[in-house]
Amino acid sequence: MTPAKGYAAQSPATDLAPWNFERREVGLTDVQFDILYCGVCHSDLHQIKDEWFPGIFPMVPGHEIVGRVVKVGAQVKKFKVGDLAAVGCLVDSCRTCENCKEGLEQYCLKGSVGTYNARAKDGTPTYGGYSNFIVVHEDFVLSISDKFSLPAVAPLLCAGITTYSPLRYWKVGKGHKLAVLGLGGLGHMAVKFGVSFGAEVTVLSTSATKEADAKKLGAHKFVLTSDSEQLKKAKHSFDFILDTVSAPHDLKQYLSLLKTNGIHILVGIPPEPSKLYAFSLMNGRKSVAASGIGGIPETQEMLDYCAEHNIVSDIELIDIKDIHKAYDRMIKGDVRYRFVIDMATL
Ligand code: NAP
Ligand code: ZN
Ligand code: ZN
Image (cartoon, rainbow, N blue to C red; front, side, top):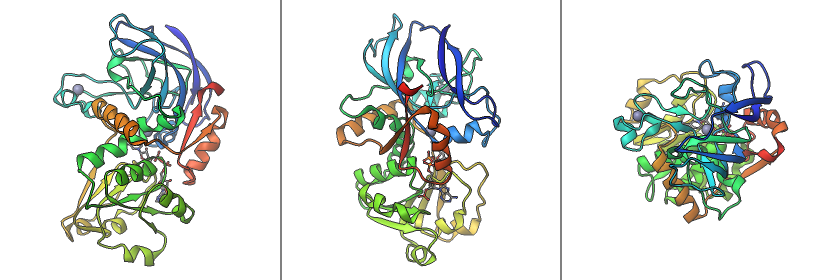
């Protein structure tokens, strides 16, 4: 084992603080890389606070990880020492089930292994990117371009793929009207991809102060969801709503904004279940769907697409000691539009 250091929550009731732990030695097919930057996802906050299910503590969050390779196992083919490397939300899966074979490792029928708050196949807990280095099987390590500022690339590993994947699956593009509900980390990436794929994009937001930013990100329209007049005008407008909201919210008022046959795609995961009235769907044969992150091949495809189309995240770089200030702003919806930790401050 190799000594590592990071920031961990010792329990859902305690703040993150420096913590020393160990990672496995580099195996034949493993890549070890020094973590330079790690994005801050709302899922980190949900999990350290046990908002979804009882977590594994101590917990080192972080699954938007970029860095530079320092060691590779003898059988590693894709990476060499000195390369840039990245890891998202997954570090392992069975690789043999039908979903893994299709590149849908996130839906592994035997259960994929999350980058943190999960157990590796040998039962040991996984620890995420709020740390100085990581050791991951090369199959789950992604290649990134050196064309961009690295901190702005980090959020692509979760916020990027989580919004790219459903927009690709439902073939959202030219001729479609897409609404992005919630302009935070995921939301701002959804706007960038939606615009890039040729859709007409509207941001639905609770924050009037984000209107100018929404337009700068490329959105064509903005609807302030607390303004009933604006909502009324937006009724029956959208082919798709991509719902990135992290807190409980009333689906009914948003479903009324869909056209006939429209699809409301959930990617946000509020701590409580949503109420769904059959009438809200029946009146226009609407659907509610959901999508989880993305598989490894599609994550690489998204990273390559971003490099080709000059897409990165809009970020605020933070010192790791300010992580709780960042979480406080996240809870208030004041993320513009992804916090990224400069791991040199660890
Ligand atoms: P975030 O940066 O905090 O953004 C969430 C946005 O939701 C806020 O900026 C705010 O936007 C809006 N919002 C917050 N509270 C609201 C409320 N009560 N009603 C309406 N809108 C509200 O979070 P994120 O990192 O983008 O993550 C968003 C959600 O996606 C989280 O639940 C996260 O766990 C989940 N997630 C899911 C996956 C997946 O695989 N499906 C992957 C990653 C993350 P406005 O100010 O514009 O209203
Ligand atoms: Zn995430
Ligand atoms: Zn599998």
